[in-house]
Length: 144
Image (tube, rainbow, N blue to C red; front, side, top):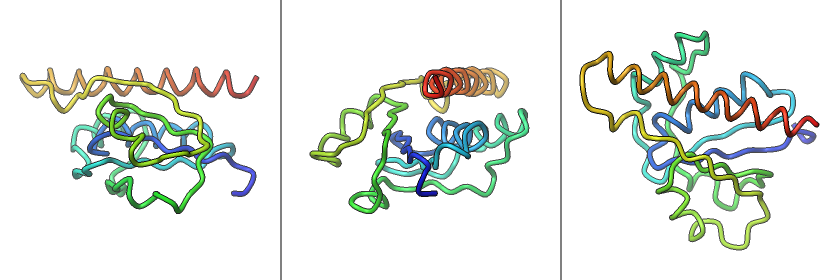
């Protein structure tokens, strides 16, 4: 693990977007990165997050939401990735004088979508696919 870069993916609730991003890092780059995710105010992982990840063969059903406070002063990260604006606004107060590279990848919150179950699922799938694309692009650039 000492040769792997650590990445922390942050979102307000650690129930959707950050969980997806952590899973994609683990799926596509576990030999290069150790991925963690956390939230400012963790909520249980949204059932649709688990469902849409299962649709593409990634099982996150045993994952748990975590607080960003679990990592404060305990880990050194190469990258901190913000997948929502709220966390990005709060984070400078949590990680003063840190040496990590900050990346801003805001994605819409699929849990905030109202409508039928199918409309909600489509929102989760769209965000999932956007996160996957962003991580693949990041990894392509990182590997150059």
